[in-house]
Length: 561
Ligand SMILES: CCCCCCCCCCCCCCCCCCCC(=O)SCCNC(=O)CCNC(=O)[C@H](O)C(C)(C)COP(=O)(O)OP(=O)(O)OC[C@H]1O[C@@H](n2cnc3c(N)ncnc32)[C@H](O)[C@@H]1OP(=O)(O)O
Ligand SMILES: NC(=O)C1=CN([C@@H]2O[C@H](COP(=O)(O)OP(=O)(O)OC[C@H]3O[C@@H](n4cnc5c(N)ncnc54)[C@H](OP(=O)(O)O)[C@@H]3O)[C@@H](O)[C@H]2O)C=CC1
Image (cartoon, rainbow, N blue to C red; front, side):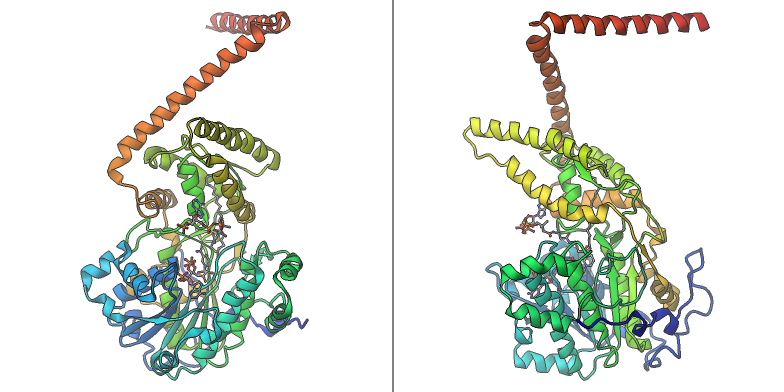
């Protein structure tokens, strides 16, 4: 297995150095001039603003139907209205044709602001049928000809982000499809920038992660060749050995993908975006937009519904959440910078919050819980009251008491009333999902961010507002509040006017709990205390001790007064 030497990947900052941001958030003076020796030299439009650059350009986007891809499409259409066309690679899925899927996507609320500005925005979107796991990405030769003739910028967002993906499939999509897309990009006559979306956790086996492509855990070509002849069982058996310290095939294959992208840096200008845990939008197109259960969103929802009551996480570890609009603003700006300044080597951007505006899992827990108490989700199973702990045994205890026991009682009730039990099944799925997330919520990482600072320094003051990725301005409590409301409105499609009824439901649940606790005390009394002389003696002893303490404290407080 050939291993690459880290020294062969000199740090980007040495070659394309920018200036650090001043504390006020403004770029230091003089940063408008792009780096010189480190770049191929600015292209003709070097002084153009971001929107001016994209005017008249044709852009190719993979993963446009996904969470981040949709936000990217929306942002380009809204903030770069003169963009010529957005070519999106889409596959038919779940019985829907490619075109149906694109039509549905454009009807989505996310596009309301674009629709207001330009009701004909759909004319700029050109859907190309493509299944990324197929040879040649399953793009027709006619479409290949169109793309190679007109594309100026490529944004590669598509990936499998599942943490339980079998290695072969993750490799096929995250690495081989990326290689194929790079092959297509090489044929593009007018390509100015190739932007690859990676993850900040691609190198989560390291504690400090700089903005460099690290040597891959294995030479991708060799791994692809080896896995080709192995059956699924064999691959499953060797996967833990291959991924080593990484927690899943996702982070492993994303690390390999970065390497295959970097290998092409001599052929065209490349940018690699590494977001951390992408959450709901902060500001754009409106606060709190989110459309899936991935990452923390599913955890927040499960906690808001009163299903999740305990989870293993470190209260003091940094929760490196990054709003989706911040990631997309940075991505669009990086596309502009890469095309205009043409850096000689692939520039990596660690798009994270931890080093700049840290917030911790303990604080997230507090704000999520208080937000869902103020604005409850509909039909909660129990009152939202989740706690995180880093202690394995304490977590197991609460799983038993607060998850399994209520699930058992509820399923018993369902069975007795002739319905199908379901709660235990829901908890089993939830435990599997949170088990896969615990790795990320139990520790923290440090990320370098020199290229982010450099990029911010390159933007005009106006572009810094339009493509804002300065997370120092992020107010976490406000963001978390909007995030929780966003899960209610956009993921669960719950009506905000039903909040009073949801609050009433929580009051009902509280009363049920009080009644249940009272009945439990009476039951314990009847079974143990009323029936056994010894239990009664212990009970009287404890009660008299309490009285003695009380009268002692009362007497001593009267004396001191
Ligand atoms: C205690 C409360 C207070 C909160 C404070 C503490 C919070 C700690 C949170 C910690 C979060 C840490 C997050 C770390 C993330 C690291 C990110 C690395 C960054 C990235 O680059 S990748 C993006 C992240 N990727 C993911 O999150 C994917 C993870 N998901 C999976 O791998 C699979 O979905 C999973 C979990 C294995 C489940 O697989 P499966 O059982 O096969 O289910 P499906 O995925 O097919 O889903 C079926 C169906 O269910 C919906 N769904 C999924 N998850 C949930 C959920 N949690 N709750 C409810 N419903 C859920 C899913 O949307 C599907 O619905 P369909 O309608 O599409 O069928
Ligand atoms: N979400 C997060 O927290 C983070 C995400 N990232 C990275 O951001 C990128 C986007 O992630 P996100 O938007 O959240 O992911 P999603 O799962 O929401 O979107 C994935 C996209 O890839 C497409 N895709 C998947 N498989 C295929 C295929 N075989 N052929 C064609 N298209 C396919 C999906 O299309 P379809 O709709 O047809 O399934 C979808 O458009 C990824 O590269 C991910 O690694 C990085 C850090 C964090």
